[in-house]
Length: 121
Image 1 (cartoon, rainbow, N blue to C red):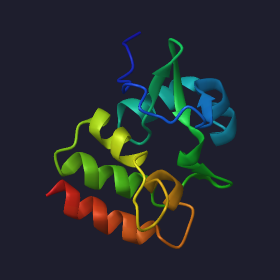
Image 2: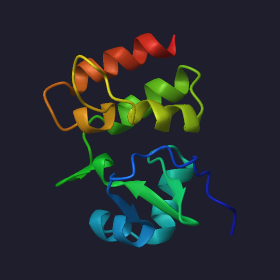
Image 3: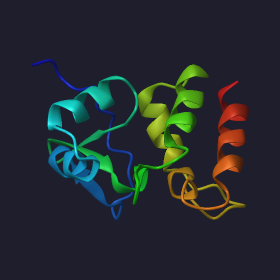
């Protein structure tokens, strides 16, 4: 089995994370499918304590947060590495008072995508 492309752990210490098994259960897919989602940039994961984990903020009640894939696509297509994208997602935007990953669950989601576009190019 090939290794997963994991980012460094840039997450705040209090950031809730999910194991690959927990992600699989939440999405109602196999862990192999979760691994594929990570490899294909549909999810970002980091290594925490030697285990791959996915930030819980990437999900909502319906599965992967509505704007997550678009936001990550903008960052990666704009030249960000996976590490840079993960760091950006968990760096607070002062005037919003939120991490971009948290803003995905608010009315500020589209504003965060616009800022990602500006930062990427």
